[in-house]
Image 1 (cartoon, rainbow, N blue to C red):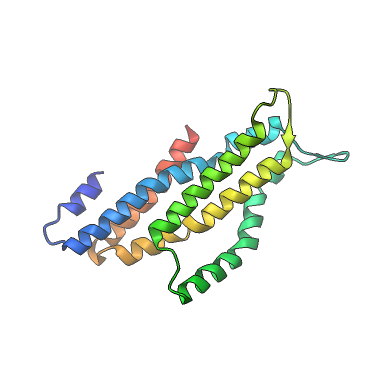
Image 2: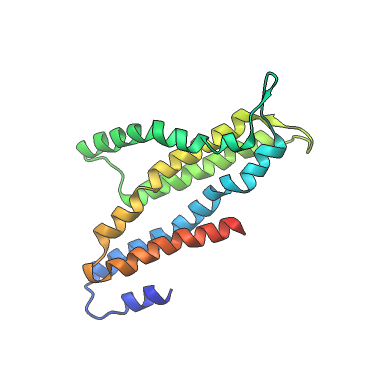
Length: 185
């Protein structure tokens, strides 16, 4: 907050520079919510996978840690599709802007948690849900990540006045750190 106030009160900033800094600050704020929910994959969602997910395929039980491999697999498989999609939309001047990509990412995060809530709705505490529920959650979270994650560094690079780029990059990275702190809590 101090860094933001320091930068925004700089009298040499133009209105356009100040507006761009506000975009960085607002997007950095909302990204905290995305990453704090997303990072539950390494915490509460792992406990859910261990305790409340049926991981049996025949006589074999999939280790809980193997489910942590889903996100990287989805990233590798889906990244080229997203590059293709953004390129095609850009060629048609229809590529979503940075705030819209962030909104799409947050929406997909919400859909992911809606999916898992549907999976556990009305089940007994000793009942285990299908592995497809948590796989669907991870898939949807990855879709959201592919909308939101790549935008941050390029956004700060594009929107920052050169003299404040490192401080504004620090704000962006502090938003990730804050999100991980909230996720841990």
